[in-house]
Image 1 (cartoon, rainbow, N blue to C red):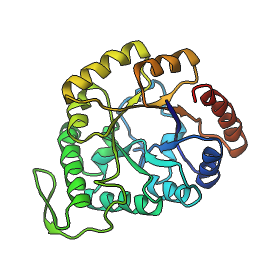
Image 2: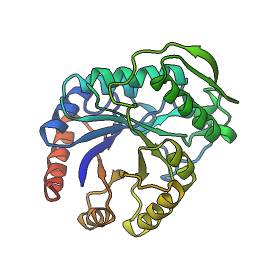
Image 3: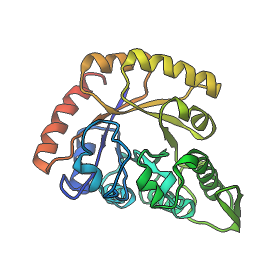
Image 4: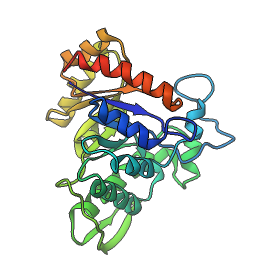
Length: 274
């Protein structure tokens, strides 16, 4: 089982470059970072974690800028979004951002995607929360067309463009892997677009049944990456028994010195499973 890191990169925590170097030096295979474009002052959507929304949600760096900085100082580390809010993103610009990252990183980009939860945030981008799932599916379809066709076009209810040229094309073929986030409602999207399932850290007892239902929906094996995984050895062993491909240990957003101390502890934990 592989180990990576999931975190929020903000203006108050460790900077991208020292974070990327530290991860590669300690043998982690990947980094997935969260995205929020902004947080509305009059937010009414409840935070799933309960209580007040943590400060990190207000202060995230643009993921593609941060990941590009990291890609330029690393050689092996996979650099991924965890997750890119496709419901809030123009598909043509996003397709170019991902392939640009793929080029700069020499084929190490991972496109982690989701529909998002903050209804007021997505509404500010012109997205109707009631149709965000259909919108995301169309945008993903359009992005894949832009990546894989010399003359790409797409005609749907939400995305519509006649043939266009769009470069660069991905270094990875046919395109960077798409890791689809979400729960069981996302299973049809995973079956259609997903190279992997990017799933929250459910207990292994629950996750096992979900994996079986996903395989039945997709009619194929889907690799599983656990997002924001705990450092509990018993839970990690449970994930290993399920055949989970990767656990992304959650790194709190803290200054550099504390972040490096945490990564040292995480590296010792990961070493037990290599």
